[in-house]
Image (tube, rainbow, N blue to C red; front, side):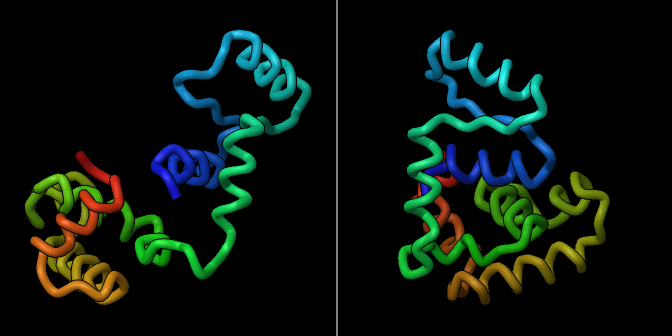
Length: 127
């Protein structure tokens, strides 16, 4: 699953009514706004097709097993933030963040932070 699909899923989970990619044409933007104003939901047909293809469980990357909070911590670690910085950002204790890190490593079948960062880069989750 590509990052834009992950963003779309997360956006809808957080209550979004629509999702468009940056390269969306102006006429499609107008269609989306009209549909949302009528109380509907909107995603582009190409994104809908891509999401539908992503429901094949056998092809899902391991990081899709992470909870929302684990995913947040995973991305922050992958971007080089320390346990202390992440704890401060999320208003959690360092021990809690360390627990999340352990769970993430376990779910992704990794052993070190370096492996975690390499995995995130390989999957295109961070630059």
